[in-house]
Image 1: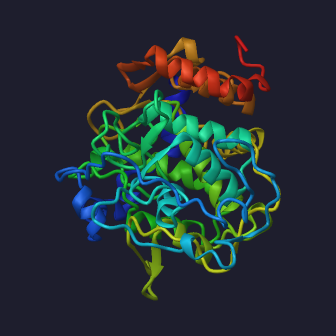
Image 2: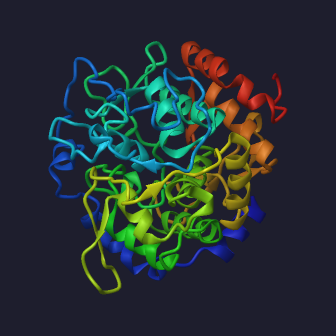
Length: 409
């Protein structure tokens, strides 16, 4: 524990180092109708059934031809939306449509690659990730399974990309599952007066852009996530960083690996990345971007990555980003900023906040345990997965994780 806290004392600047933090409470609750209506104090639209993605003679055959949750042809480098595909152009969400914390899923619903109402399912997400971003089947299965296990219904494969939509499952807006503290550009749950940790935060987006000088490479994203960790530590008395914080690091790889035009062969500059975060350049000063949460878009003349992004690739990048972010300890504050206590979960290889095996394989096997057994949700609360969720995880993910040599596989 001494070593973890000593590291934090060296890394963490005081609250005064983040003067923008005082703006967070007033900036995370956007004025766009879809999010006004979905604020924590409001209600969530109820849908008896999902409309479903638009499947036609363009999608998926003019893309990578992934359908029904099966593998694609892997032949990327294609224009998205496809030329002539009028059914999959931007269509703004109505007040009855659900949007949430994931920019890619919001975009997918806005373009009808996912159900426009925001109620999607496992097969839709697997197809979407492959057809639009050219993720390899193993990575598409992992992310879709992660969402359904954490915040969906494993019996039907259904999931809301935001609030629950009237279903008996929580949806992605639920705190400390899919959505967690220290995200790229969203407010920590306990720093928002309305509990809105799912809308893109204008102040944070501008901070991110300035920190990385408008170029969101892996070289910048590691230190940036370290800075976000320290901001949460010094401003959020209820800050918690559990194993699912590593999922945030996975998303930090996506600007350069998935959202740049041509993916890893392209340039993750702010002009390309901003539309995915519903951000628009409307000024010329230090903070020139304004945001319209729920209006995530694909930039003009955008091509997906030519070669698939695989499951092993993303875990290698998470390892790299974890080190570059300062290998932040797992744990949380105990009611006031800078009151950090390290997490100890022997079963997950975590002792006083330190992860015993932070290699790509170690991180992968940690995720397998979390998705098939139990999840630390706070310093003193674990969620033991029900048998159905654990069985779903093992059935969908066993083959993907076997390549890492995880125990029991």
